[in-house]
Image 1 (cartoon, rainbow, N blue to C red):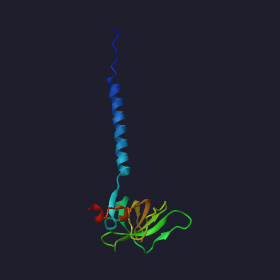
Image 2: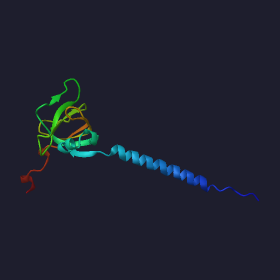
Image 3: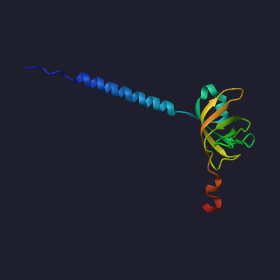
Image 4: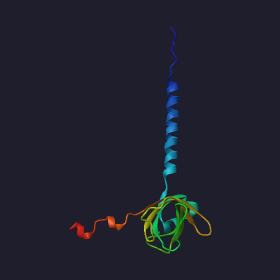
Length: 141
């Protein structure tokens, strides 16, 4: 009688290879999607070298607001909501939301850069919905 070779080592090797590949995909996906959610003063305190990818929350200042005439995009100064002396310059090249205006609360997602003054290169720009969409106190009664 011939003795059959066992395939157990082959199955173990295949399982380990599959588990290792899956662990690598999960770890790299989490690393790419993880980012800080900070207000402007927190981002400035950490510094560009410690922030990298981030979402910043703040209020658009009227001073320094520049809309691109030929292309989509805007440059503006984002101020901390509670401490308006803390500001950062934001450059954004995408489509600007209709309700983007001075004084609007916005969230920008992108990368912080160093230089003489730190700046922020935004990939996404989101505005907070204006209060006209919220129920008023008289409507709740």
